[in-house]
Amino acid sequence: MKRITFALLFGVLASFCANAQVQVNVHEEAENQPKIHKEIYGQFAEHLGRCIYDGIWVGPESDIPNINGYRKDLVEALQTLKVPVMRWPGGCFADEYHWMDGVGPKENRPMMINSNWGGTVEDNSFGTHEFFNLCEMLDCEPYLSGNVGSGTVEELAKWVEYITAEEGTMAQLRKEHGRNEPWKLKYLGVGNESWGCGGNMRPEFYADMYRRYATYCREFDGNRLYKIASGASDYDYNWTKVLMDRARGHMHGLSLHYYTVTGWTGPKGPALGFDTDSYYDIVAKSVEIDEVLKNHEAIMDAYDPQRRVGLLLDEWGTWFDVEPGTNPGHLYQQNTMRDAMVAAMSLNIFHRHTERLVMANIAQIVNVLQAMILTKGSEIVLTPTYHVFRMYNVHQDATYVPTDYNEGQLVSPSGRIMPEISVTASRDAEGVLHVSIANPVVDKAQTLTLNFDEFKPKNVTGEVLAAKTIQSYNDFGKEPAVAPKPFTAIKKNGKSVTVTVPAASVVCLTF
Image (cartoon, rainbow, N blue to C red; front, side, top):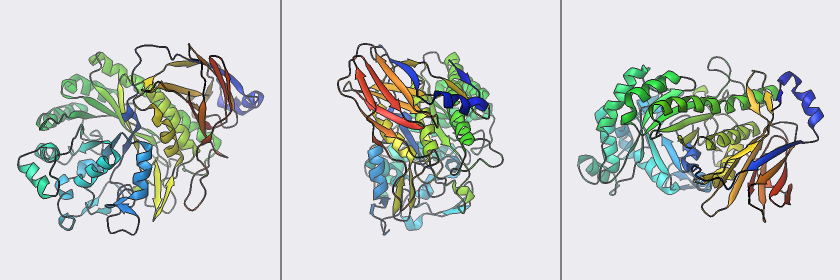
């Protein structure tokens, strides 16, 4: 592999601008390959800024077109996205959320101050019923984050009973609130970021807390819980080691959080108007998740070689400075072609880890951080990241198809290494082959020849997501600057297909 220092990048690229030749071997005949869990395309909705209110929920009396209080345009956009699972109510908000405040008549629900995110007033008009009804509308699995930081074992246990039991005191209360049949709840997170905003705990202490809480979260009437321990942040491998050592027999999953952020102190950089150096730094930081996953997985493998415990990357994505003039605690940022590239490169990596990685939840679904959707009044914008998730949803629950290729490498200004090209492939239940390609290089198209083991493609179609610049974004009241278009730069030759992928673009092919 060639390795190019960033100082020489542009001079080298100029000499290669006649399009690099990349040979990609697609091993569609490989046997015993893992499934790409659809939950890797999961979403995250926290009571933060305008994610819930104005984003998902406007209330049934709103002038904005809605379905029983849910924004109609947002519901339709999420149905197109095929959201498989949604995490709620936090995030940091989860460990200050008391679920009884969010059930019953709206006029009787108490208000609280959202002390984690901007000190805004939370009126609890969106609670358990509203969340579970939304998941039913979207045909997605709910994932609850339970309150361990400021809550009690009894509180969390009763919440599970309220949701899933057919009879009993909690079931009767649910029925009085208008829901006769219990919901199904599979994914239960026991706390969130317990090393930080969820209680500032040491891993040894949290491991014992987890075991206690998990014990009393019972299973009712055929409902089966998948209990998830609050895992590490980024590079904290000791947290994973302690949790696997002390609590692995009591958990089904262990979470991990990884944000693409330049640093937690000082400015994080703007979401708009960034330069090429910043672009490469961010993309290179995002692909570092590959090494982070490998390291956490190695620790888990040492304690759990059968891989019974799943790894859940239940918070990930870009994190920039908020847009000027917005509440700093609301984490509202715009979304450019750079974010789309981070999404595509990250998803390509996740596909390679599905023997242990069973879920990922991008932060967040609307109006917060690397959002799928932005709203303003009655207007809605589908972000570049949304389009990547929509283009990639063909990989959900498909069989992973291994590939190998001779990609080059770049070194970002911060010294991080990133690939010049990223490819992933899968075969769905109908036997259709899908190949997705991300070219992160800003000024170089790349020609790829896909060589199959035995497959001779007859029909090939494609979509491409690209823009005039890496800074391009979609804004309210304007024609989309970043939207998928048909991709036609395809040449077939027996068991090979050659495609020319534009600079800074994402291409998805269907065979």
